[in-house]
Structure formats: structure tokens, C-alpha cells
Image (tube, rainbow, N blue to C red; front, side):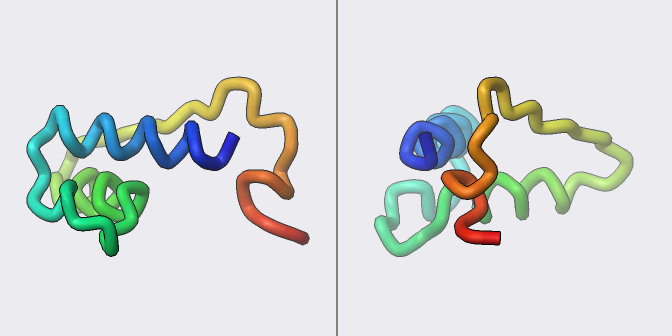
Length: 61
């Protein structure tokens, strides 16, 4: 699930043509999150559908 999550953010970064998207050292989640945070007055919401295993998403609690 984590790989699909990261791949979806990479796909989003690619569609947005964000700089660094092709760099394997760049975290696609961080890249998209940073881009969203740079746009003032643009509220955003990420919905994680079927994310019923918190340990898979966020590691051991």
C-alpha cells in the first residue's frame, strides 16, 4: 500500500511538472506537499481511501 501511495504522489508531481520529480533521491510525497504548502490561500485535502492499516502508512506506533 505504501508503494501505491508514493506512486500516486509521483504521478501527481509528474502531472504538475514539479522540478526534481525525476530525481530518485527526492521523496515524491514531500515534493507535492511542499508545492501545495507554497500556494497561499489554496486549501487542500488529501483523502486516503482504504488506508485501514496505520502501521503500513506510518510505521510502528
